[in-house]
Length: 159
Image 1 (spheres, rainbow, N blue to C red):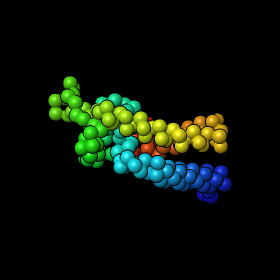
Image 2: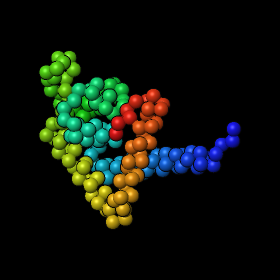
Image 3: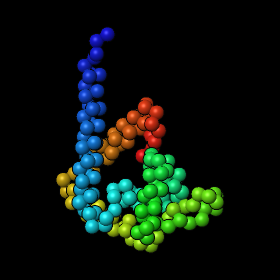
Image 4: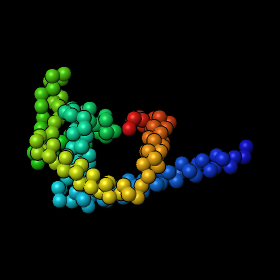
């Protein structure tokens, strides 16, 4: 059965979207490393601090599930952030053995500073971008992520 031209075009478009998203992810990671080089945090640690700022105190397993990573990797980051005084363990009323991890005042301050720096970079991009185009691109990327997650059985279809 011959492959239809529309199918080929759609396949090439999916591939182009994935390659563009991957390229953007690399560019964003490099930019983030540059603007945050003074804080000494890894990208994953910055992500965890931001996650805790947005979601509030969470257990290590909760964070691991939400971020799609192993508990061990989250625990390693938590230990490093705790050493720096950015997170602390708090009692968990639902589970005695699984403490909740929360930002300390220094951690909240760091998270807000990270957001401030990133906001300055984003604000510099606004004049060159159309909001409607960005909204469509974001929705398309969310749909693509959901389809990849559900069709490959990798979970985390939510964004």
